[in-house]
Image (cartoon, rainbow, N blue to C red; front, side, top):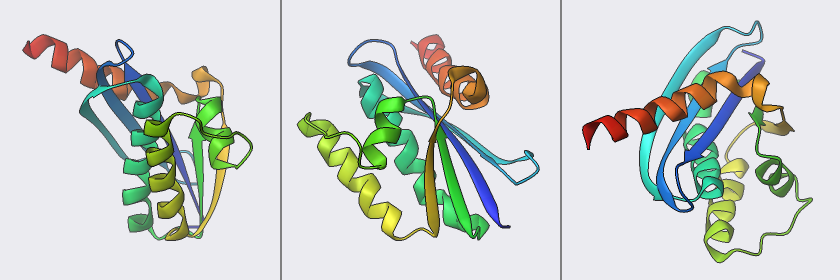
Length: 137
């Protein structure tokens, strides 16, 4: 596989509040090859966005791509991963450093900001995990 397109989303109901992540891996033709959602406990939305990215990074090399393109509707996360925005929040700094250090172990990477409507699948997965958590209470 030449290019792995990774779509990530984090969702939180509260700031912080119950949170979850959704991740979708697609091949060059746009076919879904792997997806995951997961309840991550209590987090802010930005923390959930970073945790989605980190979880995706843990699994990306399994598909042996030559390049990984990470897509997110979180402009903040994308711009921080590109080195365009500083990170002031100490909790986010730790998550950023975790993501940044994981990037080193990956093949060539690119970080792309996409509008929410282009990230529907990851968003749906994240919200499904939140809804399941809500039903179990």
